[in-house]
Amino acid sequence: MKPTIVRRIQREDEAVVRRLGELGVATVHEAQGRTGLMRPYMRPIYPTARVVGSAVTIVSQPGDNLMIHAAIELCQPGDVLVVTTASESTDGMFGELLAVSSRVHGVAGLVIDAGVRDVTDLTAMEFPVWSKAVSAQGTVKSTAGSVNVPVVCAGASVRPGDVIVADQDGVVVVPRQTAPDIARLAVERVAREQKTRERLRNGELGLDFYGLRAKLVELGVQYVEEE
Image: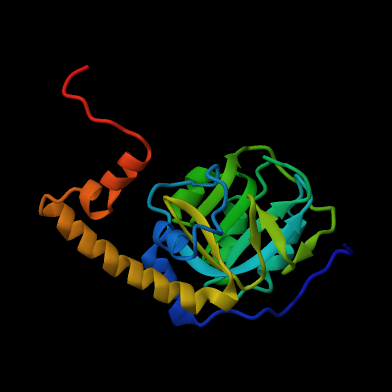
């Protein structure tokens, strides 16, 4: 693919994006049929990190952060940078200076299937980042890549403008076209879980109200009084 920068992308309605962020990764992931989850090695650099926003996607060469610099110019307030590399990399491709620039231009956070550096500074400024690695290995700015094209990041397909939800449970991608429906389904799921929570607090067993006793019988599990 020829290196390409797409200047304008479509973004989901701000209220829908905000609602998905309030619901969190685990609930959203379940609500959309357990799809869209990035691989579990994508971890936040500090425990309280949370972010939700529209994806600005970036394809970089390993150890080269030129295209991250190019992408920041195109960001709108609330966007999330989603970075993948043309081949595997753990180099520290994003640090404190890029975070300063990102924040000034409204970037809400970063998801990068590579490494980051200056973690102490990023944590102090509460810039939310999910990465594969932390590495002081520096980078260059010399190789072309692409911005706002479809990518695969940590095993998940991401298109520009898709909604990124990230917290301590990981990172989930919600396709922009289905975001309103997924938000509605996630709200309904929360309501169902609240009823289940109350039943559990009242002493009921999931074994009973989930119908799992019949499943045990079906699987041939037998109860005995002693070993």
